[in-house]
Structures are given as C-alpha cells and as structure tokens.
Image (cartoon, rainbow, N blue to C red):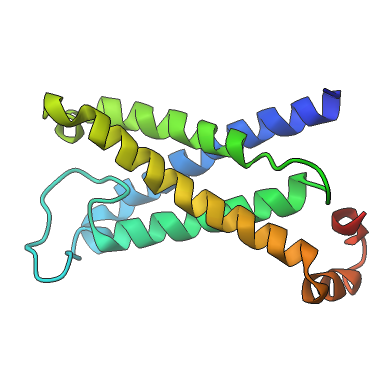
Length: 160
C-alpha cells in the first residue's frame, strides 16, 4: 500500500464523518421550520427527535446529500482502474451516525430492537453511497462521460 492510497483512505473516512455531522447539523437547525412538518402517507406528523429517517423530507435530504457526496468523492479521489474508497467513506459516516444514535436516548430506548435499528442505520447510509459511487463509475466508464471529461481542461486525471 502506497502512501497516497493510505492518504485517500483516511481522507475518505474523515470526509464520511464530516458529511454526516454536517447533515445532522442542518437537520437540527432546520428541523422545526422544514423537516418536521412532513409525514409518511397519511400518518400523523412524527414527534420523534431529529434524525436521518424520521420524516420523508429528512430521509430524501439525507439520501441526496450522501449520494452526491459519494459521487464527488469517487470523482475526485479515484483514478480509473483503482479501487474505490467508498467503503472508508461508509465507515466514517457510520461511525459518526452511530455516535449520534447513541447520544439520543429516544432513538434506542427499546432494548429488544437494537440490532434492527443498527441494520436500518447501515442500509440508510449504505444505499446512497452505493448509488453515488455507481453513478461515478458509470460516468467515467461510458463514452458520454469520457467525451464530457475530455472537454474539461485537466480532466484527463479521471480517464488515465
């Protein structure tokens, strides 16, 4: 393992944690004004604490941000033919999300469902990352993506 691979792995891990912390900060700031006022089809508005999947708006916002962050991480840290750093991004995001989950007692007050809660957290974080990484891989490997990247000065980085 080269020093640059180690650097990109630790960078991906740290960026995963930073993105989750930023998303949670935005949820806290805008919870009452924007996110808390939506509910799942016909259900009453949830009264739970601010979290990534409590309301539809918070889940859509979280999925969009995580997919975009994973896409841009893949496009900036990964050269064609190298292994993606999405796993390190995922574990960095999961670490911070797990700490947030532990700190808020309303999220884990039912002791018998802790493994289910953790699996939901893993899938809520994992799927958007896989989607973003898949889109980045598809973009760099298709003819349309290569033509687009060939028109951008300095974009040969992604197609080397």
